[in-house]
Amino acid sequence: MRVLLKFNMKTNFLPLDYHKFVVSYIKKALTDYEGGKFFGEFYSKNISNNYKKDFSWSMKIPNPAFFKNRIEVNEKYLEITFVTPSKTNSAIFLNAFLLQKGKVFAISKENEIALVDITMLKEPTITQNMAHFKLYSPLVLREHYRDTNRDRYFTVEDEDFVSRLKENIRTSYPKYASYVDELKIDVSKLHKEIIPLYGVNIEVSIGDIIMLGEPKLLDTILKGSLGLRKASGFGVLKLVDSWRFDV
Image 1 (cartoon, one colour):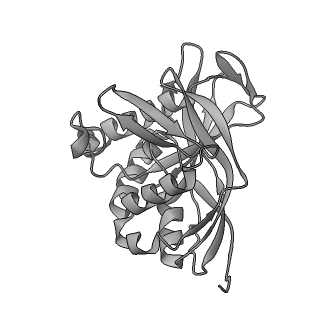
Image 2 (image 1 turned 30 degrees about the horizontal axis):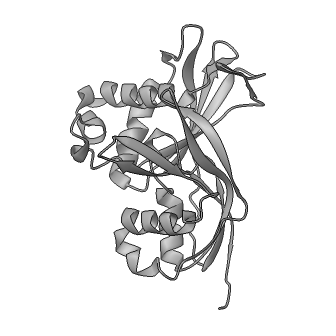
């Protein structure tokens, strides 16, 4: 499922770390739906129980201007594209969002949002072996070091970026792991950015990415998104084009 959520805003100001309030909104929607009975499947205190957390999202805001502690926009609305490959999750989240329609949700001391429109988007299917993707939300790759409890983030500027990306794909989509070794990835149109996330600046990659490989794997990546921390607003892909490339 790929669904577009459109929100009206009270003011023209957004928190710089917008990921925080979007995650809070998703949690609120799950809490209110069916007495919150599905909440624990996505946000259990025991992380290993969050087995259904296979969703991602991206946010679009009109003509943003970024400042030290806020984002300013010239129109008082924002759009969130919500993506999940699971039919079960699609039903849960669609009904949860429908229940929130028209309700006001505070995102800061000065601003609040209200969901005004929900549009189901057409989900393309990749049947060719080459695909050109645009990242609609940044790509996150990281390694957590338990001995120091610290994270290291990897971007397109790191030499082992492609190998780490392929390993992430192999882990995320084990059904098609046998196709990953032959997967060719062009990251020449990606660039590094630094963004705030829960009070910490993290390194991410953004831009376009081209892949040559098994069509079923490419289609699965499109529908399931790419990288880590997807549920926090990362890794959403849009298919720009796909075609047959003879090798």
